[in-house]
Length: 52
Image (cartoon, rainbow, N blue to C red):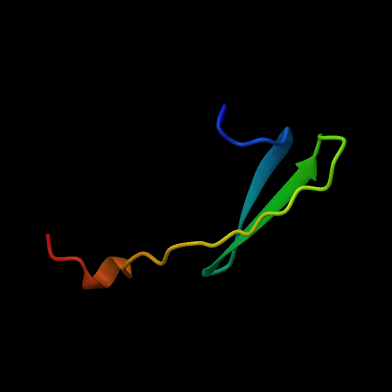
């Protein structure tokens, strides 16, 4: 994003392991200065809780 003052790379890896989904995030700072950041994920409803 043009507003963010640091150059960085973000890569997501998703793995399905049995009945579980594994999510890995890798942040790489490409800037010459330290890059403060935080990350968070938002939950989603379980498929059986959604009415069709």
